[in-house]
Length: 457
Ligand SMILES: [Zn+2]
View 1 (cartoon, rainbow, N blue to C red):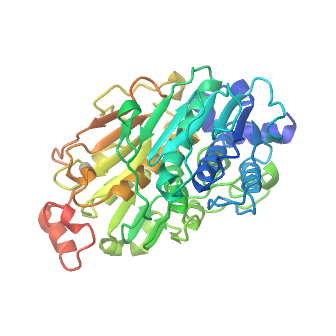
View 2 (cartoon, protein in one colour):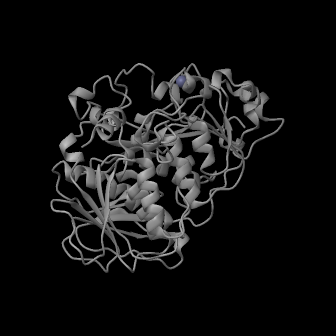
């Protein structure tokens, strides 16, 4: 490795190493082979998302991609799928050791091998598949249907998250665990059905607080799934190079490191995130944002930040429902619901100082990550964003997401025995939630689209 690459990785991979990654393992090649029967839009969404995640962690990628016009929306536009994959991977990591070859040529020795499609060599390590909203990884080739592609986008996206997680685990010595997952149903393995949604996400006027990794993953998926309505993103933070290890919309140049050297200008996270779907950026912290007083006009507020007491501040907006997603240092991606009076609030559920308030053990996977709440990996953020996107696809007053008692779902991406865990956090005297009368005064004059979810309305 030359000096430029050494310096780039030292700066970029801080959070990855805090999560327990082994640098020599990150040097192990990962090969992705796309079959000629897997070039439809859903397959392209899977291939692009997977390479996006791999390039943020692994340092040697080998791509085998058949000729196909680009049909996915892609981070970087290009005429063909192969061009889009190469342009994106090198923009994310300018010092990536990136190779390609025809299908028949040999793949690098000792590579973790991943396949999309069925027209592929036998004995690859991981194959992706999907059916409707169900994504899958397996040790044998899986079906990757491309008819009625919109129906399969969610499953293909889910398969990409699973494959990125499994590749990282496999590179560190884990055996391949065949896995099926449906994020809309919040089911796994034998229970996972093919429920899907084809319509674009349509939840009205939305305020997104925070433009970090989970927020950016949400917008990355919104771009591929489709979204309508007015969306605002508020965040004053600038992009650092170590953010590129997990922020799906961010390139090295966005962090001020074009050509792997710190010679450029850092872009605002809100600009990058909002730019993924054409949303409106607001370069403020929530507590200094002059337009915050107008917050009741939003149909939905998504609190995706945690600094500066933002969770308590959002809880006090009196919204009829808050949905958000998080990652943890225990290999989880988590979905949260907060309905006033029924559920606790985001500040009570996730206190700023760690107090171990969860129902189950939360000991970190790696002892050295204690005190490293920012330790993270791209597939955790990607899965959290996709989990939230799925919740937005599901959102209806009568959906199980709203009517059910469960208000917290954990997805365990260490891919052990059990993938899902749900919990019920009741409102137990939360000091942040506005009283019912105050919420009525705020929302009765101009009820938002989801107002009647609030039990006081
Ligand atoms: Zn509270």
